[in-house]
Structures are given as structure tokens and as C-alpha cells.
Length: 25
Image (cartoon, rainbow, N blue to C red; front, side):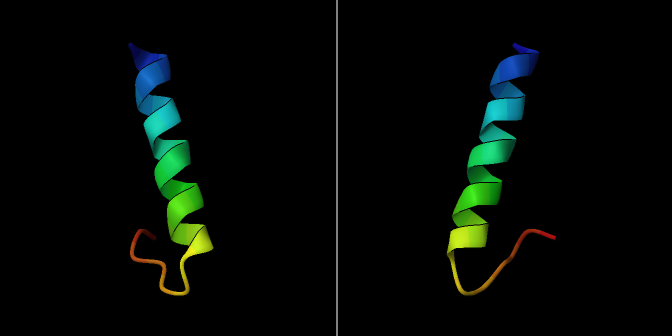
């Protein structure tokens, strides 16, 4: 369960990092 949350956080980080605008600080 905890691993799922961590994976989602990493995915969101990668998506925001890939985008020109980083909305998640």
C-alpha cells in the first residue's frame, strides 16, 4: 500500500519535471 503511494509520487514528480511548468513544489 505504501509502495503504491510512493510510486504515484514519483510518477507525478516525473510528469511535472517533464513539463515546462512545475506545479508541484
